[in-house]
Structures are given as structure tokens and as C-alpha cells.
Length: 398
Ligand code: NIG
Ligand code: FE
Image 1: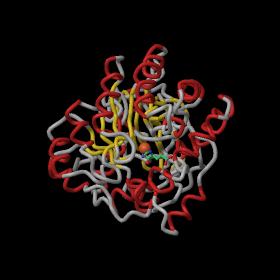
Image 2 (image 1 turned 180 degrees about the vertical axis):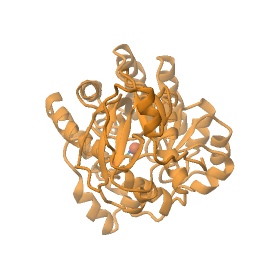
Image 3 (image 1 turned 30 degrees about the horizontal axis):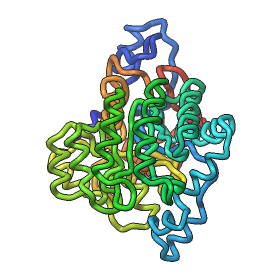
Image 4 (image 1 turned 30 degrees about the vertical axis):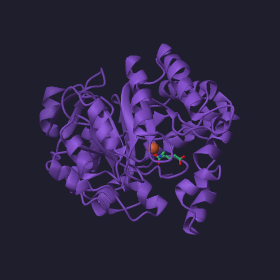
């Protein structure tokens, strides 16, 4: 991860099939492809589009009131216990139509894309009933067809135990049965999700429950992810490594054993520094220790209404460097190559190299290190997906 392979004074040749053909100095490309249409990048910095491998982008209204509550000393889990947090997004989403959710999410995904993300994983998880979870996943499917963004759908019916399963006659065990016997088979039947995820955290799902839910999802052909050791340690990273999850995400409270387990596995450690920043917790995942141990680290936004409402992926790079102490090269690789690996797309996106999909982002800076440096700014000027224009947030100015 030390070498991001930065090149200067080159152009990218893209084939009609939307794949990268060659990267070489302009003169060579002109000789090789004399009929090609040219786009002038005005000496900006062209990167692989960011691969944002962890978002919860399908929700109704914002939850801005919770930010002030936390500032006044009420914790994230305490807000959830009072019926706020994820539960308030669930109440809200259940009342919304598919069209309404498509409209809201299209606007938000456009904002994410305008900052340079071309692949975005999107989780369900604010429905928590068979019907509303399927509705959420259908929203993602529609958006994947309509928007110039590569969307990867994840089923997160195990985001919480819904409130109606917390009192007799129903129990959490009943909800887990619904997940395993109804929701996962229905999601699999219509191929609505590539991944199944679960919030494995003290106070939410236990590792034993996660093992059962994810086992059922794997049996139906889904790949696996976990919200692991986010706020308190529960051994979720160890579980992710043991069961061969594609990624273990968050990890701010990962243990030494968890780090070792991840390092010895093929599971990507996905770090979400925006979440810890926004929650005001002065504790980030031990990224340096993880890299030293040999973990593959990805960075993602965790875009969601409760813990990380940012659409700005370059800001996540900033936090990667300034809070997680990654080098700029490590941060870029975490945001591209390893993000792709966290979605099982390592051979398809995340690199500017022949054969890869021409998913690109162009930034109005002269040096790639300026992207994490101008923190919070909007420097992305255009994106391309499969070689075709995606978003063009700004005019190039040099
Ligand atoms: O990744 N941890 C659980 N899920 C989200 C937060 C969801 C919410 O608060 O709405 C997360 O932080
Ligand atoms: Fe999350």
C-alpha cells in the first residue's frame, strides 16, 4: 500500500466497451489511437473513481436533532434505547413509498458521486420488516439502472431488533427467525442483494446470532459483511475472519486478537473514520497497528443519517491521513483498490490499468496530495462510469 503508482503527463485511452486500453504520454496515445475523441483534463489529477464500500443511503428524513443531544451528553446507544437512532429512521422509512425513496436517494447519491465516488455500496436496514426491506432493495435496484453510478446492494435486515419484537408476545428470537426463514430467502430469490451484513455489537446482535444469520445468507449465495467492533469490543472481527466475510467494518474497538485474525484472513478491514468524528468519540480504529500486522484496509464514508451524514469522500481521505495516520498513498489505495476488494470487485474497478472499467474521477488540483489536503472542499470536477460521462460538478478552471 506504500506506492499508489502516481504518473505524470499521461493520458488514458478508453475503448468503446468502457474499459481502459492504455495509459501513456499523449503523443503515444495519439499515434496509437488516431481517431479517438479527446477530453482535455487541463492537467488536473485523474484517479480511479472512489469505491465507497459502506453506505446506508436509503432513508427518509435527516436526524440532525441527535447531533445536539450527543453534544449535551446523551450517547448514541442511549438515544437508540429511547426509541431514537435507527428506530426513528425505521418508523419514517416504513411510511414512505418506493417512488419517494427513489427520489430522496437519487439526490443524495448524486451528491456522493459529485465528490468522486463511482462505485457505492448501499445497504438496506431502515425497514426491518419483510415488505419494507424488499422495498428498500428494489429502490437500490431501480437507482442502479437509472444513475451513472455503480451501486452494490447489501441486505442489512439485521441492523437492529425492531421495537415490535422487544415485547411479549414477540421476541428477538422471533425476529431472527423472520430474518432467516423469510427475509433472506426472499432477497435471494429475486437476487436483490450481493451481500448480507449485520450490526454485531453489544446491545444489538451477538456474535452467536451473527453466525446464524450470516450462515443462512451464505447458504443462499450471498457474500458476507459485518458491522464489527464499532463502539465496544465483541469479538466480531474474529468472527468475520473465521467465517471468511468479505469485509469487517468499523473496528474502532477491535482487539489485538481481532487484528491478528483479520491479518491472517482474506477479510478486508473497512475503516469509517467519519463516523467516529461525527459521534464525537475520540477513538479511531488502530489503523497503523492493523497495517503493521498485515491487514488490508479500506476506507469508506458510512454515509447514513445517524452517525455519518457526509457525502464527501475526499474528507474521508483527510481523516485517513490526519486521524488514522495513513500515508496519502495508503489512503488512496484504501479508497480505491481495497474498497473494490471489500465489494468483491478487485478485478473490475478501483485501478487505472488496462482491462479495468473506465470509472474515473477528475480533480481540480495539481498534485494528488492536495485531495486530502483541502479538507472539506469540493475539488472533483467530473466523473466517468464505464467510459461515459457521470457527474460534472464543476467547470475546469486553471
Ligand atoms: O454504520 N452502526 C450501525 N449502523 C450505522 C448507523 C446507523 C444509524 O445510526 O442510523 C453505522 O454507524
Ligand atoms: Fe454502517
